[in-house]
Amino acid sequence: KLGNLNLVLNNIQRLQEYNSKRSTPFQLRFNFLILPENWKEVKSMLQFCAQNNAQPFIDFCYRPEENSLLTLTENERIEILFFYIDQLTWHEFVFCMRVINPLINSIKSSIDKAAVYDRIKALKNIG
Image (tube, rainbow, N blue to C red; front, side):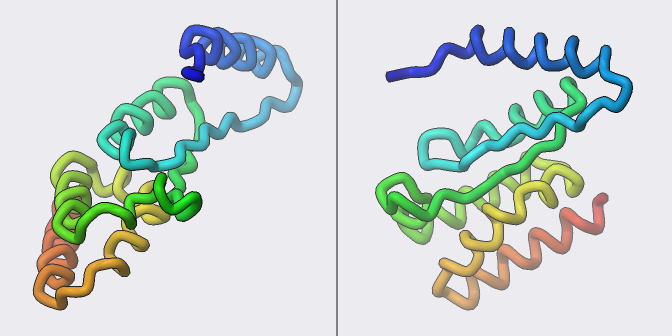
């Protein structure tokens, strides 16, 4: 069954209103589990967190295995890494390390792994 985004957004707004009235406000944290169906939505999620003054927690799905990016082909996993390198700022990229590291570790080809590291280094140098 699909969730109700409007209900979630309404609850976030209510939490923010409640939090603004507290003498000691708490930090909102939004958890986002990366799956084959949503890996392209990371930038939108990070922007949503920034707009709502929330701490993002981006996590990798290992189990059940059928929901893991590790079930994709090596070429698809490399494409995902390059997509993140091309689409995210360095600051956003760092929030995704729980996803980046398992993807890099899953690459068998030393040449492909080196290409990924070269692109990450270039992203870091850009800032």
